[in-house]
Image (cartoon, rainbow, N blue to C red; front, side, top):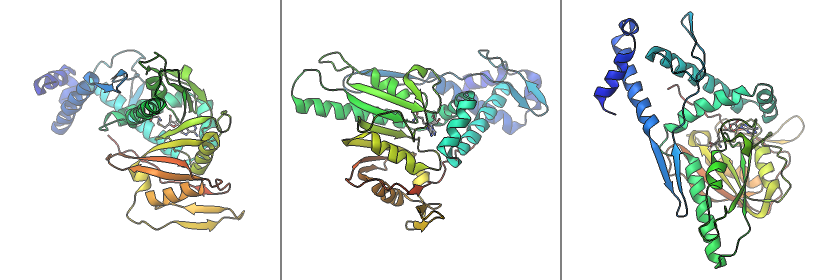
Length: 349
Ligand code: SAH
């Protein structure tokens, strides 16, 4: 996309609209248009050794917009007729996403489940904004997790030294969003026997979006999975809700004794200037409450220890998120421990 082309696009907005724009707004619009074109054209290719996956940038859903005293209706499926409408649309999508995001981080998972069940379109609103956020990151953590699981499978198969059909690897994706992880894993084929080596259970507050048939709607703190049936439990940017310990306890319950938990979380949630601010207090009902208004990764790892997990690998190489690999440490998860991490507040675009 050349600068000249972006300028031409901006010029397509009606003249009267453009006349109302300030110089700096015109400049912003040109930059925005250029970025959008680039995103739409970009398609990432992932090579896993066994498969090749094409991940194509998703298209935006259209919404009705209200701006500065007038309503601009953008019909579902239509193309916004002007750059101004498009800009309003983006701002609205962004604000709705940020509000919902904050709500999910600051309410309990039970409240979030009820709210999304009552109004499932909140899921679409959230994910439209979430997609935009992730597109701006150097890499989507889902891609890293797919690579990790593929490698783990290849290593396991090599160790078995045979081409016979191996037991499937059972994955549970807690807070799966639009089930991108399941979609990608289920496309993988073992070239030896042409079967997919994974069974994937995906859970989210509602089953919606392009892969809705792969999703089970539930509160991820209480899944319908039987105990000790999962090889890999995944929390990819999904430790939302103030009752974070409940999610980890659920992960512990469903995991096989030799299973692993993979957590990808936004760095800012677990990193702060102060490293040792954890207080263990007793609340009114004499339960342990770990206060983490200034939580750090170290504190979180300590909490995980009390919830029955040892962190055997920490990857902090990514600028946006941290990746943790956990296995059971033999301790029974503390039943009454409560833990809340800082919410991840996405900045206005
Ligand atoms: N893991 C996906 C989506 C991350 S967005 C990915 O990385 O692409 C976080 C997701 O967690 C959202 O889809 C949100 O609806 C879901 N979520 C938040 N609280 C939840 C809960 N209590 N139970 C199930 N899903 C939850």
